[in-house]
Length: 146
Image (cartoon, rainbow, N blue to C red; front, side, top):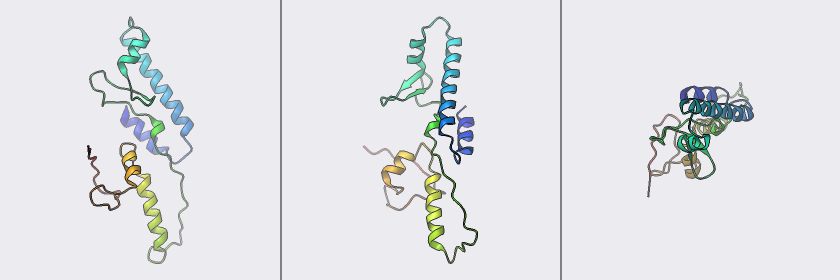
C-alpha cells in the first residue's frame, strides 16, 4: 500500500493537492480501521486503536503492525508539494550559468523525500562529515550520532 500511496503522491505533488492528501489520509485510516474491526469483531474499537495505531508522542498516529512498529502506512500529508517553475527556453547553460545553478539547487531540494527531509533541513543540505552539499544522485545513508 505504501508503494501505491508514494507513487500517487509523487505524481500529484506539482499541483495544489494538500486538501486532497488530507482527505485520502482520512479515507485510508477509515478503511484500515474498518478492516481491523472486521478482523476482530468482538474487541472494543479503542483497544484496537491502541493496538494497531502507534502514537509518536507529538500527536501523530501511524497505523503499524503490533510487533513491528517500524512498518507503517505513510501519510500523504508529509509529501512536499512543489510549485512548478517556468523553464527559460533561451537560457544557454554556458551563458546563464547562475540560472542553471539555482535551478539545479532547487531540484535537489525538491527530490528530498520525507525520510531524509528532517536531516536535510537540520544540516541545510550538507553532509555531516565533509560539509559539502548532498547531490541528488548520491547514495544517502542516515547516521545516528549520540
